[in-house]
Image: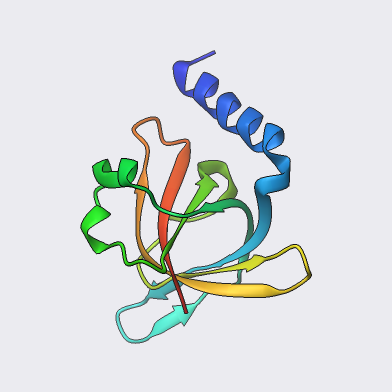
Length: 122
């Protein structure tokens, strides 16, 4: 078992322990084919959303955060392709309502197990 496998298992454990905070979302990729942007079929993923705090100053996109933005945590294994700014994430809330957010920026941890997204209401 590699060290990355240990970190992947840790993310799965965290997502199972904090199950009440985990929401189902649809991640829609925007692909640039050189002519027009093409919207790909949405990909289902799990997400934990939270507000930003002063402890997030170490994120590469910290200077882009606005007061109404949210942070989204998505396991690496849930996405089928590399994210891009401009993609969208539609999150299903507890009352069967959905909210769509634009991906402003994202960061992947050094072990490539968890994405941290800067999400803005679309």
